[in-house]
Image (cartoon, rainbow, N blue to C red; front, side):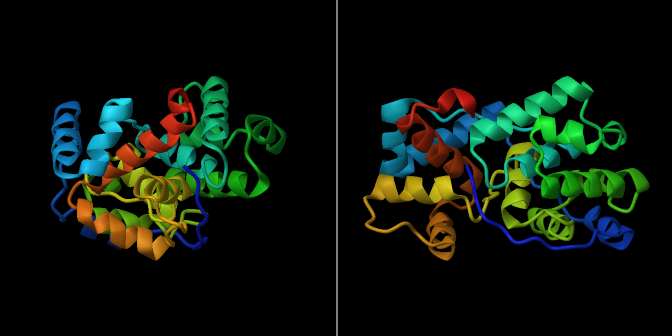
Length: 236
């Protein structure tokens, strides 16, 4: 699960979050609804059904919501899944609870030891400052439509399309979230469908349209196959 994404500067304001509170909330996936969605996709798509036949049902992978979930996404930018999981584990061991106020107490050397590059440390600090000061209302994302969550997040420095999509998919558990720009998803589609070339990001996004309104579930199928082929399921 890796990617390349652009950086957009700025932070969401109160007018944005006030507007988001009035948008109907998509129902997050639960264990039960996820299991049902997996069964539906496996039955309707023979390629995804083959993933279940080979490796079993894809796990219901989740990240924490809120500040911790976004920091997890920042750590996962352009690194291996193993590296991101290890770094986040070190951060949890250092802080206990990953919260903005305690994160801001960490100095550069501590963050480097945990696994933050200089840019990622700056992104996470900027996020912590925006949330702590009330400039960015992170809690408002819980009650916003997918498009509005995405729009608000990409205004933050260091949060691009991929990180916003990952947050929607893993932390908010939205059923139709799609992390545009994910290299592992592109490789999985290429491998599963025997494509000669790796799909471009636009081609991959167009391909995913066939799985609406369950693209987040389909993504877990693809990651499951990608990781299982490489013996890496336990690190997800």
